[in-house]
Length: 305
Image 1 (tube, one colour):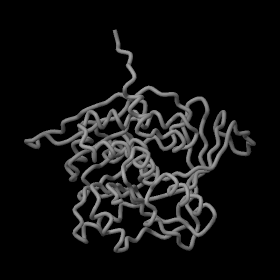
Image 2 (image 1 turned 180 degrees about the vertical axis):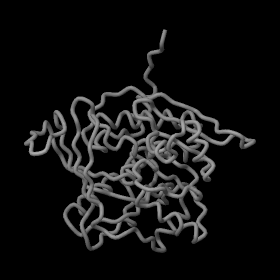
Image 3 (image 1 turned 90 degrees about the vertical axis):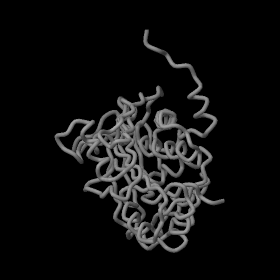
Image 4 (image 1 turned 135 degrees about the vertical axis):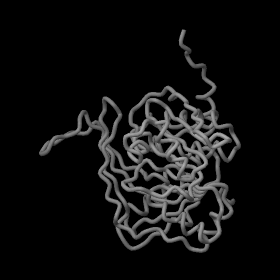
């Protein structure tokens, strides 16, 4: 089956512990719960797309070690096409994750430099050419130039939430940062001005995740004079951990886009998927399938009196 979305980027093995508080130096902090689970920005977005019934392929690298085998097997079990996930000599990316029980917030300690950069081969380029969307994270971002150089015009979505430097947006169709990352990219500017500045760099659409405040989308109005902004509140859910919630949001948003949903509907769809994913300790255990997501959205919502 041809992939409708190709995700390019990082796939990790996460070692996760739920703790009462983040430890101080020298502490021995007992965990309430701990587990190993698949993670990674683009990889978790791919799992979300697969759970929602969208044919998806993943392109990335893992090392020739036991964590690498666990990562590949985990994605394959979800129905993700893993032909582009190559096992190379090296050390699979692993992230240590501490989650504070009271808030669900997390602290990450990633080790991501054990494998070489992603290099696309002819099969990867062909897969991207036949897709409706290509979704990249900070690790997959360099692939955009390669694809554009090969004449691939497939729409590109860039998860800009986990970046530590300025990535170019000129060849990105959808820029999807966190609100914090967007404001850090344009320091000193309020949200509206930051949205306008990002749109001026080239993307046709911005989608900004805002944590407990939900999400926002922005696009340039017809005359190009300003950004039209649409906001969507967060959907209610129990929160055990926010790990991977942004990655789930992006996968669900792309699922909505390839199905031709309206922008307001796509935001609500993605907000709900991200909220439901927060019920589990790891970033994938509670990602909803289509039936669960639709049932959640069909539930009546309380309205302010």
